[in-house]
Structure formats: C-alpha cells, structure tokens
Image (cartoon, rainbow, N blue to C red):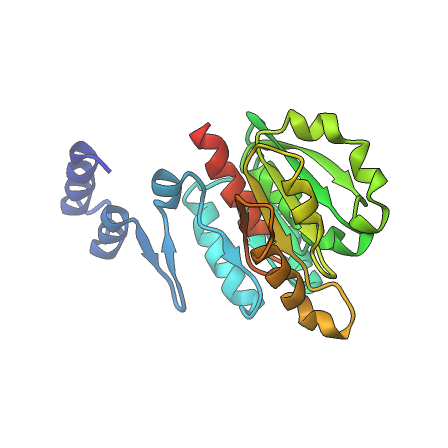
Length: 245
C-alpha cells in the first residue's frame, strides 16, 4: 500500500466514512473476524489470494471468511480439503464451483492461462490429489498437460510421452505406493521436477510415508518433494518456478 492510499484511508476515517477498525484493517491488510484474521494483501505480496483450508474448520467459519473476502471484491479464491457438505453449502451461498474428487471449491473467475506445466499421475487411485493440483494450477493461471495412468507398473506408457516431457518447463509427478515414478522421470527431463507422494498403497506404505521417503531419497538429483497428498502445494511451487523463467 502506497502513501497516497494510506492518506485516503485516514481521511475517510476522519470524515466518518470508515470506522477506526475498518481503517486499521485496510492499512494493515488484515480483517479481524470471530475466529480468523483474513490476509487481504496476500495477492500483492505473494501473487495469489489467501487460500482457505477447509479441513477442521466448521462450515460457518468458512462461510464467514469467504463471505468477508467476497464482500471486499476479492476474486479467484480457493477452499481446499472441503467436505462434500461444505462444498454444497458454499455453492448455494456464493455460487462458484466444487469438485468432489479433489475436495476443492473455487469462487470467482479464473485468470487467463499464461504458461504451462506437465502433470503426471501414476495411477487412477492418485487422481484425487492430481485433480487438486490441476485445479489449483488453473486458478494460478497455468494451463496443464495432464497425463494420467503412467505409473512404473507399465513404464512403456510413460515413454510414449517423451516428446511432451522434453518440451516441459516444469513437471509435477503424483505417485503413491513406493513413489518410484519421480526417479524415472528425473532421468528423462532437464526441467524442474516436483514430486507429490500420495497416501495410496497397502499397509507398509504407511499412508504415503514410503512414497515420501522414496522421493526424498531419489538417485535422480535435482527434484523437489512436497508433503503427502499436497497437490495444492505442488501447484503453487510450480507457479513460482514458472515466474522465475
């Protein structure tokens, strides 16, 4: 916020057009609600609006936060890990769209796509996390070459896409079980590579811990790994990499 904007807020407060709390919120970029402090300036600092993490929040809490953001003209807002019930309520109150597979709700308009990422999904069981990543990329203004079901159990399927991989600026790999797909792709590309371990797998996969450790210990150097089932985080990292380029 520049000096002239601050002066305007102070003037509006002195004229009675803004309350002291409203003026303070605008200057500080923080809106205080009952259980939350909404970051109004996140887009200016980080390039994207504050994202609402829906899991563990009540529906009234999310409705209050999203409503406050929407009322102030903020657009292109995501609610991640939103239950089906929460998604239904948000669509009814605010319109927008809800994807039940990824548990992702989107409010507002999507920006035009300005760049492209390649998203590889190892198996159909990994699709919910891959879909979260895909829709987050869309909200970040990044188009996506979404390649599905190319896990290492049938590695010849991946080799059919070598030309696509060679043209990629950033590749995101979504894989559960032992997470081996990241290492395979790491030996095929020269662009930045992001691994997303998923909690898909039998008992000894330990809800994705085996895939996480495999990706962290990959012998294909130069890859980054986000947390288990964090398709959202991978998309944000990809957007920052593409901004560098």
